[in-house]
Amino acid sequence: MQGLTARPLVNRLRRRAERQRLIARGIRRRNALRPVAIRTAQIAREDILCLATLRDERARLPYFLDYYRNLGVRHFLMVDNASRDGSSDYLRVQPDVSLWWTDHSYKGARFGMDWINWLLLRHGRGHWCLTVDPDEFLVYPHMEHRPLSALTSWLDATGRRSFPAMLLDMYPKGPIEDAICAEGQNPFDVARFFDPANYSIQKNPYFGNLWIQGGPRTRAFFTHDPLSGPALNKIPLVKWSARYAYVSSTHMLLPRGLNLVYDEDGGEQVSGCLLHAKFLSSFTTKSAEELDRRQHYGNSQEYRAYHAGLHQGVQLWCSESREFRDWRQLEDLGLISRGNWA
Image (cartoon, rainbow, N blue to C red; front, top):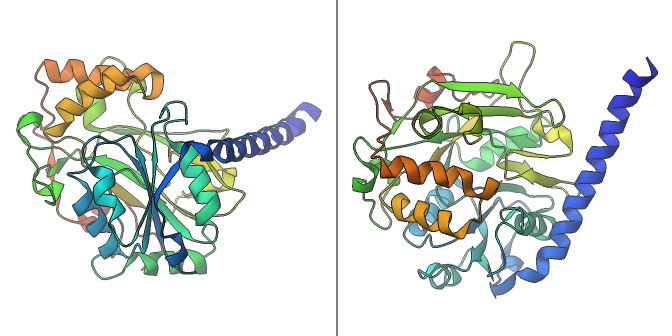
């Protein structure tokens, strides 16, 4: 009996030590970031912030920024990890962007999360902060007539500190290399399809988050070992505090309570999706480069699978694929929920 009661206490202490370690890592890694264009003095008390780390994403940036501006993001905190395609030149002149540049190791910074944790600690405290990649686009209930500030106000009023969004891989009908998306174009004009099912969910007992896998990447690239497929669970929107830290990408955070974004008693809590515009023509070149750089998780195991699949001519569209319409379609499929946010 004593061991049973001691275990939760030990785990709490371990998680507290891990959180403090991650915050300290972020503080130490701040010196890797060189200020390029810092406009953080413009940030107002109620502003919603968006944070992202990027490399060679120049063609995506105009649509990315406009998409989130239209949702209600007021300031962007961006880290350029040694882009060579003019990304920094584009971002430095955007009036609502603060930009840092680094050529330090992405892998050595825990895949960029040390840099993000530092910027969240320094500039995000007290703000709702949305942390995404440049190919991730948030969809949430009622978004067609309710800005992001309406969602965060409701989350504040109901005592919620975090908002989950499942990563939904979008893909074209036909070869990925033929899915050309022009600069500034909506990528989902090209990559219009997704898997409506074929997802597995497990609970991580230590961190408390749900672990979601499956979809087209597991179906096409990890057929023989589905458990090695990428995680699709994300908690990208958080009312930030100096006591918080991301543990693994935006898959989970500490303190543990931030990960408890679901209802285990048969109900549903509000949730969204991140439409993932990864599978466009640029992905072929990107996967080869990232495989060579070896800056991703597990010695770039994921990119090894992508490279092998692309070499074999893998196509993601299948007879069960659905064409994306709107958030209501995703709700009907059980991929997002409005919960009690009527």
